View 1 (spheres, chains in turn green, purple, yellow, blue):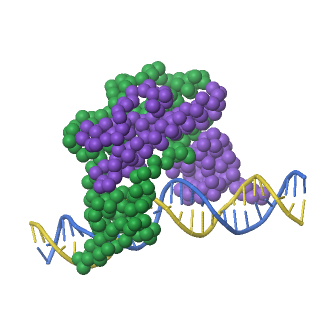
View 2 (cartoon, rainbow over the protein chains, first blue to last red; view 1 turned 180 degrees about the vertical axis):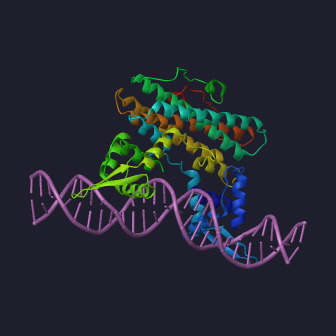
View 3 (cartoon, rainbow over the protein chains, first blue to last red; view 1 turned 90 degrees about the horizontal axis):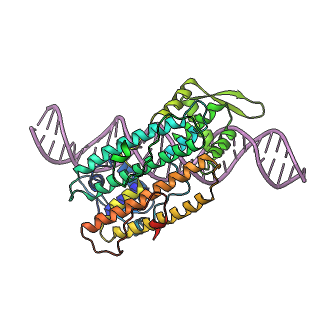
Length: 193
Length: 193
DNA sequence: ACAGCCATGTAACTTGTTACATGATTTT
DNA sequence: AAAATCATGTAACAAGTTACATGGCTGT
């Protein structure tokens, strides 16, 4: 429940009501993670049910102020402390798609790879152009998000190239000329050909 | 609905009943993606509701054989053809956690980064040891999955180091000595220190 | 006869997501 | 007075996940 944990994080600074949580959430993520208000309320309700949060003030003007409970504080601490789980197993739609495409009659997994690759490279270009606009004292949250996307997308391109090479090694008739990637991190030019 | 699409993919080869779909799914993913049978039936039901699949035989021995409809075939084709969406936006729990940890009172984002990093490097080592056991004519699906994890995890380590550097640049009291990563892809040794 | 697997499904739940309903306050 | 915004929430749904119920067939 990463959104719930984020709400706890915001509440850790100070008690707050729903609307404020939404605004603060988007402020911290640099508006890169738009959050529907409704979701704040339902998530908050779940947190209250689980005893992580408690209403401290039911203002006459309608604002319902929530605060952390001890359990909530503890839960938040453990969220920060415990590394995010990856395995088991890696539920990645792209991997699944590629696995399914391989050995599928009437489907060229090379085509699938290329489509994915084109889209990844395109994204990478958008991202680097966004990064160029980034000011050195801009929002840290936004920078984290952008960077993460860049690294993940780069990794995807490499992975796709690896998969392609693996397929060719196994002997497939092919479509595309070779052009291996060994570009340094954060350099789109060599990746985009 | 990536599981649903996978079921369509399997059905594309031949009509099949639930149990067979489960087995084939796990066979193709090299058992790296265990699939509860119950989920097959509910997913299948959804697919039938959406007209992607149709029951073609209600065997007296209890097996219910399903087959693709034209819509299902078309949907599958488009799944393979259309690159998997990433943006907007990147809902990554780790990013969220780090964003929330930054500027959080009483929480050191450097600690969060280090915990995540340790866990990533550990995973990377497990993965490379798994890769070493891999035979050159082993299951392709499994190889794809493993590789994807390796690349993604590597990217994560880089990202974490980048975040740390960014935080230090902004001036934080620190804990860890520097040791930047510029290791070539698929080399765990330089990443693990 | 009974253990075990094959095969079917259902119910309940989690997290996330959108769309809508409602009332209060503020601005024009 | 009308429109906009603030603030609350509900309903419905998607996709995934687990646990359980049921019945048939098979081998010992």
